Amino acid sequence: MFYGYGFDSTFLLILPAIIFAAYAQSKVTSTFNKYLQVRNSYGHTGYAVARRILDVNGLQDVPVELVKGRLSDHYDPRTRVLRLSQDVYSSNSLASVGVAAHECGHAIQHSEGYAPLIIRNAIVPVASFGSQAAWLFIIAGFIFSWGNLIDIGILLFSAAVAFQVITLPVEFNASSRAIALLEGNGLVASDELGPAKEVLKAAALTYVAAAFSAIMQLVRLLVLRGRRD
Image (cartoon, rainbow, N blue to C red; front, side):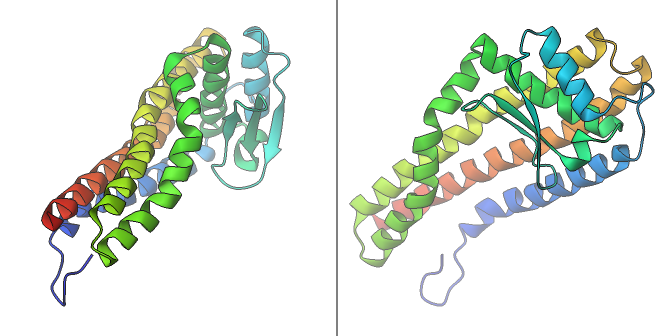
């Protein structure tokens, strides 16, 4: 935000987050592309790995579907469907089996009632509404100099921040499970676990960057709110 024609110094609070987010996105893209070109020793596709892991964990009723988009892979807890992008679904690369195993980790979390996942799923509606509506209240509050509106907006935005923060243990745990599942089920050779970990670590950076960005944006809003008092 700007005051008069002067630069708002609070922008400097979120500048590191912007740079980190750009780095994280670049890292995950380059790492995924690198190992998308490396075939796993056993020739398993992402679909085959996902189906195998789900079946041995008693999740035969969880279908694995193809979804459009790149790196759009996800497990939907509402419909109990695991969806893999084209690059993952039909590819036998190390990147593909790593991502497929990670999404299976989420399916297993759901079946076991993993607490952080349950909490995250519970706050999705509030976080979704908060991330969209918060700025309407905040901008209107600053325009009309009405502190109560700003406070409501900050409270709503806090729900979105909470969602990003609780996402971290969910994603880290899914990645840990993925490596254990790949190793325990003999789905990749022992020397291929390292590259799979690299892919998942790079992906995890994007979640760390998202949480960091959300936190710093919240700090910035609180500073701006303090200036209005």
